[in-house]
Image 1 (cartoon, rainbow, N blue to C red):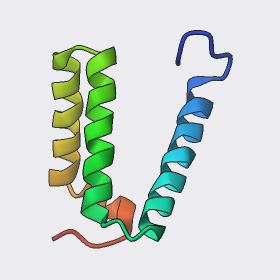
Image 2 (cartoon, rainbow, N blue to C red):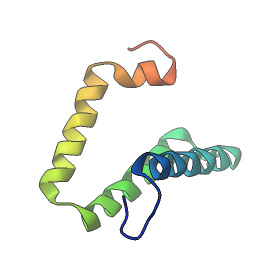
Image 3 (cartoon, helix red, strand yellow):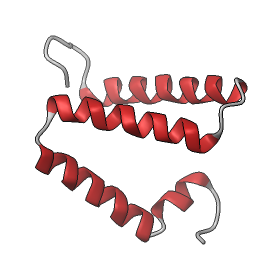
Image 4 (spheres, rainbow, N blue to C red):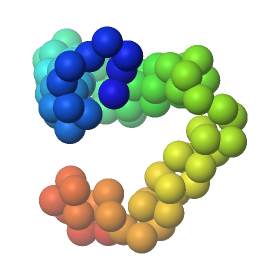
Length: 83
């Protein structure tokens, strides 16, 4: 939760997720490719994290993401089979 925010963390996370979903929808409507959108979002996310958490925390986050990919969790979220 950000300093000065009265909203519970889950509410702000949900709001942030909705904003990101709308941004993705807008970029797709602008015929920006999915890989370009994802790369831009990932780069922006890493830049934000680098200003707010340690390098070790970023590595931990990325390792969790790698484990999710290897475990097939992301394909379940996207509604498509792994592979």
